[in-house]
Image 1: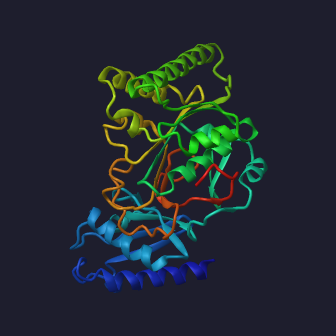
Image 2: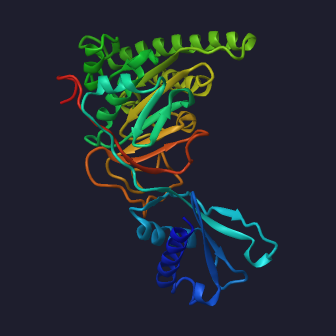
Image 3: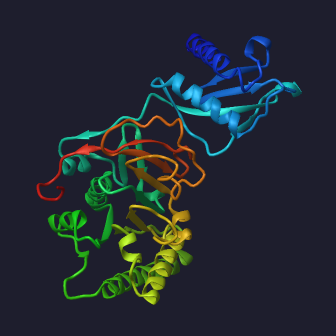
Length: 363
């Protein structure tokens, strides 16, 4: 292991010495200007201060770009929003700080599933596998946001999540489907009710019906909160409110009804976690017109599928510059971030599972 770490260290030092020449103004590891320490969960760039270069986000991102390309596919660096400083265990004031670059071994690997329903039954309760070695614990979910352009794989991923919510009775499910599309067909195949538009009703009337259902969910949250007050250890069955194409609900609707919709989903997002009531929101984008900012901030599972660039990630990952993140090509790829105490907070490349399901649900 030690020999392998030394090999990686020397390789990284060589890569950085060759690529950082202009930024570092000629300072290299050969002149003892910096060093590298290899850890199990990443590497540390250790500058020797004082130095003629600035330890800022620009330098951090340059090192990320160089190292990520150099280490791929043996390691995948986990992109940070800002410079990640760590303290070194030394009394030498010149080397008491370093820039940390966390990584995970290998690359993201797609799950290939021959029978989705059968596969879901084999998985541990309240667990949703996303990639090989990467799963979501339903007990740690607050809200889920899935974003991406049309054809990017949102419906495919939503059907996958629905199958695991249904499996082993993990969660009660409420489905809102403004397009009367894939979620509705899945709901019909699984005998689950769905709220969808009807020909003889206006859009405002449709959203009013959704508001009534959301109001009932908020009442459930308040009842469960009262129970938790007396019994803090009480557990509840999960309830997941799945709303497809949220943007279609917030555009062209009576202002009062829209404000009620925003108020209800905001309260559910803020209060639902302790009482096991979650939102799963799917939309082409998540700007302030689509949902309130507070709802987006409460989501702890963020997924962007399809084309990845600074423009497409600006709402779910406002502080992220996706440059340098190696995302495999193909359908159902993108980025995922799970904010809990089991996963790193970094955004990592996503490869959605490939699976087969009942005929007639997906196109």
